[in-house]
Image (cartoon, rainbow, N blue to C red):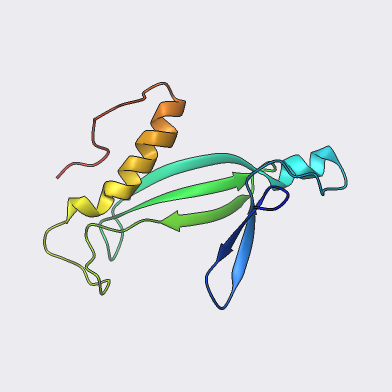
Length: 118
């Protein structure tokens, strides 16, 4: 991380997210605008092809969405084909990160209640 920016390297291309203190901006207001100001773990229900999705969204200090990260979907196999029965273990990473970062920030640390049900 350099000057508050996290580099996400995907091989042929990369991008940067301002996730920490940024000192290179012209003004403190500009630095605050660039930095992640809000994060939300989400789960959607329904849709035309897949019955739901699990993800994380980040917004900057100006309320603009920066990125959406989708996590493994229990309704899709490794070839992204729909399965007859969900594989709920595929939501383990989303549930763990949500429990560690979102629920603990809300004072629900150690919550063992699963975010999804079979």
